[in-house]
Amino acid sequence: MASYPVTYLAKLGELTLKGGNRKEFEQQLVQNARLYLESVSARVQIRTGRLYIEGTEESSAAIEYTLKRLIGITGWARARVTEKNISSIKEAVFQEAREAADRGAASKEVKSFKIEARRSDKTFPLNSYELAAEAAEPVYEQKLLAVDVHNPDLVIRVEVREQCYVYSDGIRACRGLPVGTGGKGLLLLSGGLDSPVAGYRMARRGMKIDCVYFHAYPYTSAEARKKVEDLAAVISGYSINTRLNIIPFTPVQMRIRERAPEAFTTLLLRMCMMKAASMTAERIGAKCLITGESLGQVASQTVENMAVTEAASEYPLLRPLVGLDKEEIILTAKEIGSYDISILPYEDCCVLFSPRHPVLRASVEEAMELYRALEAEELIAEAFAQREVMRFSVRDYVADTWGREPLNKS
Ligand code: ATP
Ligand code: MG
Image 1 (tube, helix red, strand yellow):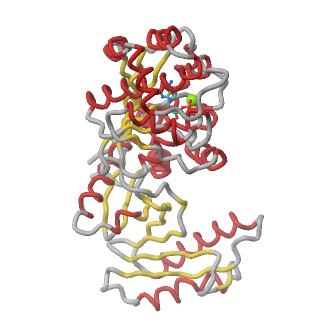
Image 2 (tube, protein in one colour; image 1 turned 120 degrees about the vertical axis):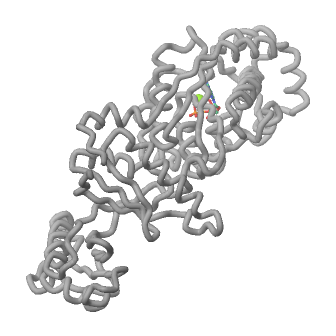
Image 3 (tube, helix red, strand yellow; image 1 turned 135 degrees about the vertical axis):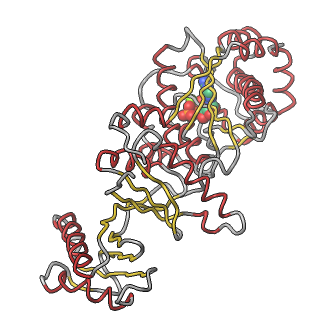
């Protein structure tokens, strides 16, 4: 029997609003957490509406990595686990308060507290109210923090179950719905700031994300490709497993350069990408395409030109960033860890082939006619056939980083 001295508790997010199928959402959440932690010694369960992850001190870094990325929880905390007697509980509460006071000391942030106690073990001799009152005593008697039941700086929670758990307000998590409950989407991933954020946003709606990247070697460098691979790895931190399809698109770009009016080159390239992405989606069972487009950001992202791109796609085209501005996108990019990779300087293929005066408001009919004149379908099919598929798995990442401890599973 393995022993698990370290316990983390996480609050479930939006899935608690689900009715009859709530169980399925919970099961998916547990399964996802287990995938992250497959290679380390940890136990994952949902009990009475909370996610519990128990592990050893050695697995705590992997568990915290998981909780920072696991979609479907609103917050988490590391709990002190004590015996079910009031003196152990008092001591745990006091330590919790002292740590919080120390953390907040510099900024004088934490001066008051309250205790919220819950007792699911009704044989425990004190009721919730009495428990909260007694457990708080040492903290205010020793003038560590003052009691404030209305507007406290710190809430310490005490839960008496099969053991007793003491913890305070948690670290905010990703929220959203567990990945895998919302079907699969194919993200058009370029090296820029926007598309990784778009993928993350859809993962937070429960979608499993696979990626496709159009590479135009030698016009785009090996470094540009490496950047996209690194971004796919960031996405796998949230989507758990991600496959990156790399499609060699140079011949298609050359055809566009030969046959299309300069003002239309970017738009036609987008249309060709949509065609190849649709073929990829069909192959992998994705139900939609996802891009990082945001209204008005560049010439190809006017509403008229979006209609053109859309007409070339055979799947619903989702644009989760369409109404966000650059600052909002950057904020999320920093949060998820894609920002530092995205700002590396390597150009993507689209920049190299951009027209000086791109068409701003193309009509679908005109664009379609130019697209047909490219006669590029065969080239696109060849490019698709030559695609390379790379697999990124968060399991492997956790195993490489933290999985070397001796496994201690029961
Ligand atoms: P990003 O920052 O995501 O690169 P962007 O601001 O550079 O976006 P565009 O270059 O117009 O905007 O691209 C719009 C969208 O088209 C991108 O968000 C991405 O989803 C997709 N896209 C562009 N270039 C590529 C590419 N080489 N491979 C895959 N998808 C691409
Ligand atoms: Mg781009």
